[in-house]
Image (cartoon, rainbow, N blue to C red; front, side, top):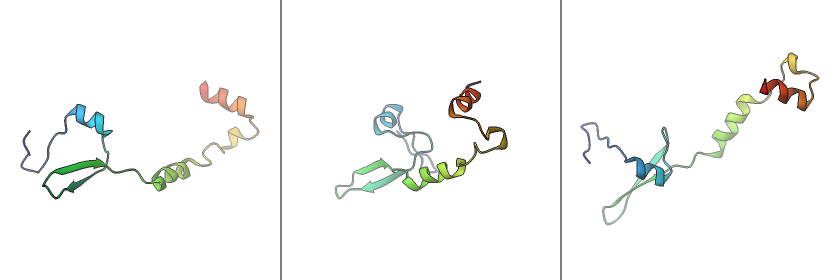
Length: 79
């Protein structure tokens, strides 16, 4: 495997899958005392998940949904 002029390498698919790396994943590098390099995924902070929920909170409060029961709302979503 070669490093490009931009310092990039392609991580083989089998390695990505085993390490749980997905497109747009954040990774961190660690150089060990013996010179080995460790690449590991960076866990997404809980705050980003919380922020995603905050962005959609209240989105089902449109006037067309007022007074709808859960079953009726679920039927609307599935239609």
